[in-house]
Image (cartoon, rainbow, N blue to C red; front, top):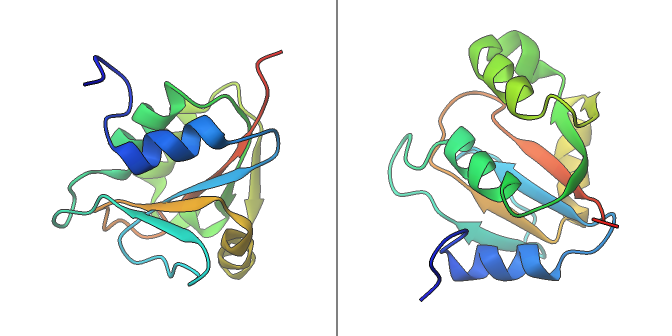
Length: 131
């Protein structure tokens, strides 16, 4: 048994397999997931696990060079957006319309579905390299 880090086997495997430029989506409970993209469903009930809890766990293991969010997140979920920005303080952030965001998920290695029920609580993490 792993002593620390991501304990969810499919999520740990995806993070370990990511290369430079690969996309990983952390999503709220309502984001549509393209049928061809791997779904890692962590949702247990509304709010569990939260978007920020899953983001924190992934950021401990994945080197992120850039993140993408829907521009709507700033206006519709300002409290969550503020907490999100604190966690990604040194990571460049791109804002796109929600429809563009949803289209981008089709290129992801996986979409991690949380129990988050806050509007627009979604992020695309772009994998970087550690060297």
